[in-house]
Image 1: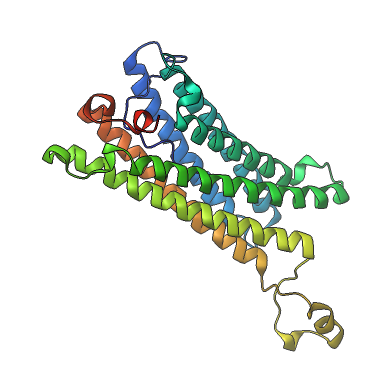
Image 2: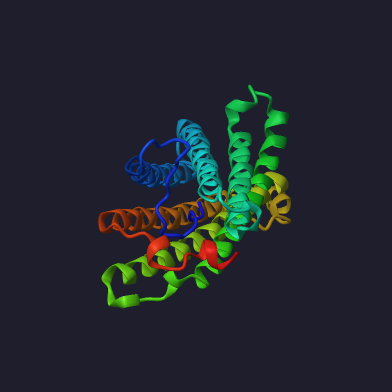
Length: 283
């Protein structure tokens, strides 16, 4: 999933935390949960690979859905935290709000897609399942594109922030923050692109009925003629590989975010005091 906004300011979570220290623990806990949810994504993507037992596919569908729900809850909580931290100003003047709205909206659409992809949702109705799978692919494409837009928006705000300058004051902390942020945003961008391509390939299979690749020598003349119009070569497996690669990029991204949060709290670093926060720069 796309990075949370890159800002190094300490998040308060005043709506759910009673003490600033609790807010720090909650922030670390959320990044840990997001990291574990991305591990679920990676496993779920692998379970879609052809040749595995049907139970693996069913488990993969559940893991995808659960992981998406986790990301949706975290995205909503981040939006609530942002609104609470800017209560002294008009929140609509803060461009980070719109980045967070795109993040929440794309995660919601993607989550709806994972629910529609779950075969247990249709109760054995094959016609409804086929239609739902096609709609699920469209939701995955739109949601993945939203992840890319949110990440690009994050890149743009980061480019205007003082945090983007390496080596300010010559301190190691100042140098670690931007390097980790750049790496995380880079991985989030690549992961989003892989998800878009993977979702599109899945839609080709659902919509056009692509067949698994078989060597021509194993096909009859009639089968060769029937398959002649399809441009698909194990297209489901190709999409699965793209989702696995994208999930791996998101896993690295969330791991870097977790490291960044730990460095921030261990050093007592607070961007609001140390730098001009991009949340203020872009107003």
